[in-house]
Length: 457
Image 1: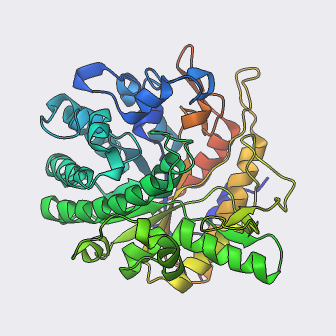
Image 2 (image 1 turned 135 degrees about the horizontal axis):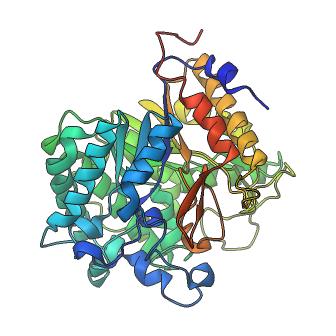
C-alpha cells in the first residue's frame, strides 16, 4: 500500500484535497420546504429508467443530517467540499417565485463549512433541472438559458460572499449527450436534433451564468466542470485514428471549443451544423468569457474505432475493446495513464486556466464486515490516479486541487443505489455512515494539507 505521507510529499503545500457530492444524489427531502420536482424526480419514477425504480426521495437524508455530514468531512481532515445547489429548492418552478427556505438550507450549509474551516466549492447545476421547465422544452429551449442566468444571480447574491469557488455546470456532456441523445439520463431523449439544441443552449447558459456570477459576486473564482474524455483509437489504422479525432470533436471539442476558443469544431459543424439551433450574434462571445479555473472529472478512457456503416451519423464511431483487464464494479476500465495524456492533450489544444480534478474515484460495492469496509481496490485506484496528478504537477501543469468522488455512497443516477462510489459507506436502512479503508487512507493524505511552502520541484 502506498504510504499516504510519502505521497503527500509529492504535492505543493497549498494543494487542495477535498471530497465531492451532488444535491440530488445525497439530499433526499424531495418534497420538503417548498422544493418542487426536478426532471430526475420524474425520470426516476418512470418504469425502466432507473435500476429498481429507485429515486432520490430519501437518498442519504443529507438535508436533515448535514451537520453530521460536515462533522464527518472535518473528521476526515479534508480542506474543501464540492457540493451542488438544487435549482428546484431555490426557484421551484424554474422561473418565478424564489423559495427562501431553499436558500436558507444552503446558507446554513455554507456557514457550517466556514465554522469548520472547510473551503466551499459550489456547483450551480448538477442535472436537477426544475421539471416545470420541461413544459417549454427544458434544455432544448433558449428560454431555459435565461432562467438559469436569473437562478445564478439569485444564488450568488445570497451565498456568494462565503463561497471559495463556483462552477456553472457539472459535466454538460452528460446533460447533453447522455440525456438527449443516448437516453440514459433524464429527460431520456434519444434524438440528435434535441441533443444539438441542448448543446448550444447549455453552452450559452454557462456563459450567461458566468455573467450573472461576476455581476453578483465578482470576487468568487468562476469555472466550469467538464468530464473530458481521453479518446484512444482501437488500432493504429488511418480509419481508427480519424474516428478518434471525430470522437474528440464530438465528446470534448463541442464544449472546450466554444468555451475556450469561441468556436465549435470545424468537422462537427460541417457534419451537423445545419441541425444546430440558431446561433445568434454575440452568443459565442458570451460563451467564451475567460474563466478563473476549470474542473476535470475523470474515471475511465474512451476507446473508439471507425464505424464503416454507410451513412453512419457523425462521429461515426463504435466502441473498441478495453486494453486493461482491471475494471471497477460498474464495468469501467481502470487506466490511470489516460488521465495524464488527457490533461497533456487538453493543455496542448486549448488555452486553459488552472485545473482542479473535481471528480475522480471508483465504484466497488464492498459491504461491511465486522463493522469495517475493506475496499482495497478503491484505495489502489486513488493512489494510482493521485500519483498521476503529482506527475502532472512536476511537469509544470497548473493542477491546484483534487476532489474525491464521492464523500459517501449515494444515488448513482440510472444505476440507483446498487453502485457505491463513497469513501464513506452508507447503510440506506439506518443512514449509518462508516468510513471505509479508502476513506481512512485518503484522510491520512488530506490531513497533511495545507502545509508549509513546499513547491513541487
